[in-house]
Amino acid sequence: MKVLMLGWELPPHNSGGLGVACYQLCKALSRHNIEMEFILPYFSDEQPDFMKLTAASPRGVTEIIKSGIAYDSYKYRYQDGHEEYHDLYSQVAMYEHAVASMADEMEFDIVHAHDWLTFRAAMRLKIKTGTPIVLHVHSVEADRAGGEHGNPLVRDIEESAFLMADRILAVSDFTRRAIHHEYGIPLDKIEVVHNSIDHDGIVQLEPDNIYRYLATMKGQGYKVITNIGRLTIQKGLPNWLRAAQLVVQREPKTLFLVVGSGDQYQELIELSAELGIGKNVIFTGFQRGKAWRDAFAISDLFVMPSVSEPFGLTPLEAAVYGAPSLISKQSGVAEVLHSCLRVDFWDVSEMANQMIAAVRSSALRDQLLENARAEVSMMSWREAADKVYAVYQRHVAQEVALA
Image (tube, rainbow, N blue to C red; front, side, top):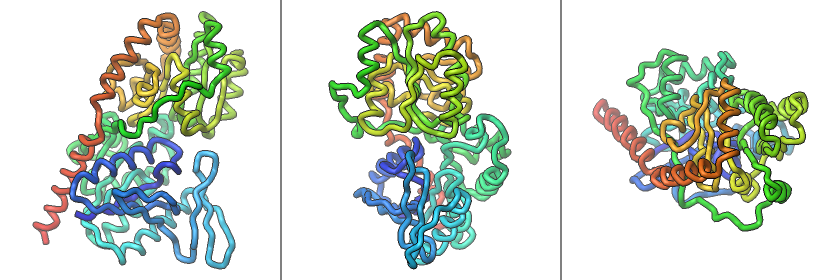
């Protein structure tokens, strides 16, 4: 079976969990008898042994360079030597037309597209070739807009794609129901394929934690509560900081570590100052590798306070690297990780109460972490891959029968 995979990012050039999930799913799918070609909107030097990576190169473009602090900006280099940056919507259109053109030289039995950025390309291929399309939904526009309506252009793309899709895969039942609620898509057209964690990719922690200041403060009795992720409206950080203010009032020896970048970065710094907790909140910016792992390891508690989180890999990663979690009830990961504290994203008072309970009780923290690690150790991308492969088989078989 030949699968054409359409995705917007892969590690190490990823700005979030989407690229990680795509990579790990493809790796697990390679156990089956599948030839995969993954089309990215940029050139990558990486070339995994389980699939072929190809750049969707528009006409006249010789190189597409993904850059920016969180790899969120593309630079297009043309044959005549000039370079241009394009906005996101232009990039999506260029990707669509490039994929449609490249399809003439490709053979594939099914198209698997990840999130709205590649859905236009998937629809174009279905119209052009009649090939079945599977849409993998890692988030919908309402998630990214923090529960609001969001961008009407993106919503139009999502709605059209969902109606045209042969099958929709959702990363959680939370997301499955969001697709149904936002767009009226029948629930029986949507299948849940939970994300997981790659145990082979776990890196052993080094003894010298990079956050030496925090380690020194912990030696003086301070506790560290951490958030790691994109600093956007979807992630609920303003409510977390308001809860942090209540925590500091009752437990002044508490520090809050914010690891990530995003459009709320400056706003959150200013809010910390306005709340009078600026000296308790540390912003690191976007981090990778050791600095990212050490942020979990130095933490007494990891908090994911998202307004709407389709899945949320970070609580699983937190368990691996040594931190128990407090997560939003409005998240998909709550369906698979039970050994954690939970709170409604809007309940600032209860969020503060649960953080204080974790700060005060080492026994609670230790038990949560032990149980979470046991749960995570049983998770595998293989189950997700088996579900996806079954979908492929079903729809390819239907196409053969119709032919």
